[in-house]
Length: 446
Image (cartoon, rainbow, N blue to C red; front, side, top):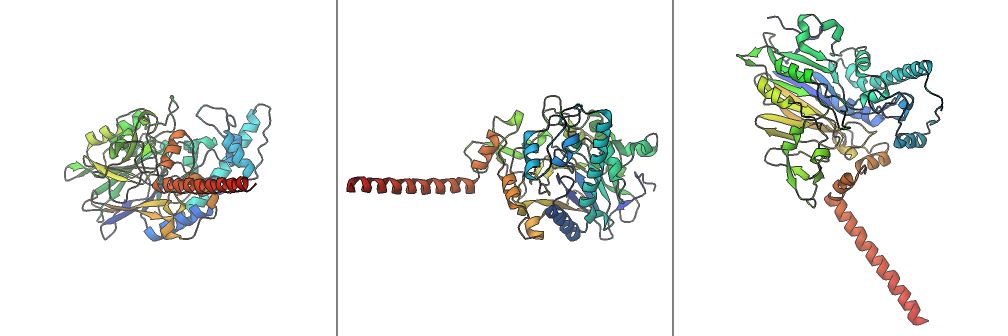
């Protein structure tokens, strides 16, 4: 049998019939990667012993103060413009210079700034990839909505990743016009066949999909029309006449993830407000479709453009799961009409997210005989590392970050927050009552 591969690395099931994948989502860090994030990745890789690591976007914290000179909020912006006040404030708190020349960014200054940023991006990548590359583990990368904001576009970042041994991302110029072109659509969107243990057939497929960044409305992006069409048409072979069982990894979730939730009232414990077009309702997990241990910490921030990705996957057949990142506080897995929808939470420590102990990577164990009957679990910081994070104030701020009235409502609906506020309110009433009584006694005594 001849199996098309994107490069010289053949991925195959182990002799025991398993294939282990580690999903690493939303490191979202700057030039100096947080030591806690590196420690978590290292411990997870060591404990999981994966055959493949998939990085599902927002590896680069494009809005980090270290990238201010080349920051761009949206594609097409002039670099170094529209730097958010929060980034400037963080730069001051970190002791970084916030001085920027008032003169226009000349071509020479622009290229010099971009050269510096490319070096910083490479250094960041080197740090969080080290636990993977040092063990000789293959890895694959797609992109999110913050990677490009540093000013270095995904195609350039792709070139940087390929400088590290084990990178499976294809060079698009190398595959165009060849048989292998069928396995690659665009930067961040490509297929990886997983061969059976005896090498006789493709037993499973893993698809990386670039889900875009932002759209014209200001909302989040979605996979391109070309990527959706490719997902439906790509063929890795057949499994007894049926499409090869395949799983998709990407950054931004499609609207279908709201099917995993149930609408509820605004006073329901742990309810979250939906995002943008879903913001007229509050939601909780639907226990009828979600696996035990699932958590919902924020409304899925999906694209407002429905591109028909899941419909294309269903028409193609074979696809059995779609896993995303993007929403740092979500870690649920649900099954609807035979398709799994799931999240990995952030594994980073420089952005918002859950409590430090719940930042994690997601492990998958697939079985050659039936890839659809896979196991998955989170490898959490609290279990693997145990010690408190090095920057507890940053973690606390990220856990309780209020970016909008909706996020404030989500926080107030957490039972422990509500109980804490009731306790403080009671304490305040008691103190004020005592102060009032003391004043009355003094008045009566005078």
